[in-house]
Every structure is written in structure tokens, then in C-alpha cells.
Length: 215
Image 1 (cartoon, rainbow, N blue to C red):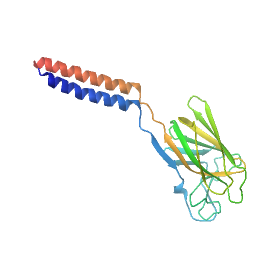
Image 2 (cartoon, one colour; image 1 turned 120 degrees about the vertical axis):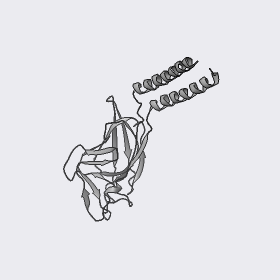
Image 3 (cartoon, rainbow, N blue to C red; image 1 turned 135 degrees about the vertical axis):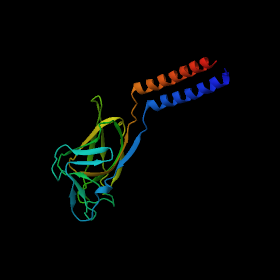
């Protein structure tokens, strides 16, 4: 029996085994920007899209109303259309908007663009976001708009691995755009890692038995 051959075979099995273990720790994160560009239309009014809007792996839900006019989108010639970018607004006073992954997975909320409702509706606009974790604990962050017409980008802190985020349409009102989210890496079941270990060890033992028989 050649020792070099045995060691080479063991090296290949060990490499496969290590790859399985590393791959088993987590799936890769997926970055998504919800920009509402698929909702852009020409005109001087609003489009109403009902109480839910889905994009990629996420859904926005108006928890206050499910009627046709629950969410509104300013058309491109509407004075509320912001700096050439399609945005959306909760069309109910004190309406609550919820963001969640379609399959209930945890995600990281990274940033959002916010604007006053209109150039003639500039006031002390602030928006409070509440993130909920799988264990029911929550995190909150409030953003104060600068009182200048146009979108501002706000960045979240601590909104990692949340399962939902809610915020309320309170006076003075706001619209939003470009929600940046990332699906949190999900560890694979321990059974997958264990299977990789068993397969690696089993393959090595089988190879040793075959070589002993041949000797």
C-alpha cells in the first residue's frame, strides 16, 4: 500500500468535508432596494394600489386599511412627485405601514428615503420606526426631516435580524422611497452539517477498508 496515495485521498475527503462545514454555517446575505420604480406613471394625480405592495421577497402592508386607496403613489406630473423618483405614501391619517419578508424571515433594515408630503406642506415632520425581533423584543428609531422639500436618506442602527418594521403616518405627513434591506444570513440546520461530517468520515473509512482488502 502506498502511503502517498492514502494521504492524497484523505486530503481530498478532508477538503470536501471542510467545504461542507463552512457552507453549512450560513447562506449568503441578499441586498434589496425597494424603489417603487415599477409603479411610475404619467399624470398629475395619484395612483392607488390598495393595502399591500410586494417587491422581490418583501411586502408592505397598510395595517390600518385594505381598501383601494390605502396606499397612494404620486404620478410623475403631480406636485408631490419627488425629484424624479417614484415614491409611496400611506394614504390614511395615523395609518400604520408594516414591512416584512414574504416568508417571515429575519432581515436587516439599512436605510430609507423620506420626504415631506408636499412642497406646500412643510412642517415639523418626524417618523418613528419600530422593529420587532423573533423573540418579541423591539427597537425604535425616530428620524426628523429637515423641513426642505425633497428626499433625505436616513440610516438605521440596531435594525438587524428583525422580522417586521412598522411606522405611522402622523402629522406632518411624509412619503417614502428606496427602502434598503438585506435578508439576514440563515444558518443551515445542524443536521446538514452533521450529514457532511458523517459522509466525510464514512468515505474515508470505506476507502481505508478497500485498500486493506486490496493489500
